[in-house]
Image (cartoon, rainbow, N blue to C red; front, side):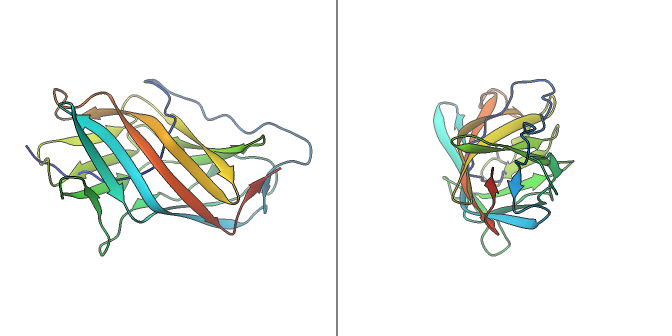
Length: 197
């Protein structure tokens, strides 16, 4: 059995099956994402997807991952994102068995933020918005958010968005070997550094 999957370390709080609406940030007067109306790139030096294959750990890791968006002129969003990327031709994602992993994003992704201690950033993944494959399991692949959009949330501190052990609902082509979720973890450093007030 073999396929191709893309490694990805991000902790993601995925909503369960079904459509999950992305709520705009609270409308606090004068608050919002700073700096406003600014193109931002967020880069991760370690994003991971973790699963269990017939009770064995299966980890897919990317040493390079990124996402980009433009902050709103005011408020907390939502704003459209460019499709996130995972791995490069020279630094591909890999699994813990040595296989090459490919993670492909599609559809309309959005981002919103919310003030607080800590502030949070949420990303909505559209239905079927991630396809994950690995050369280790040629006959298996994962589809993230198979039944509808899901929202994942991370903590924002010092310009870094951190996702930790966030469950993502999946469908897969080898259901007897994998469960119904994988976990995402990863820290994304924003440039320029964003804040939420």
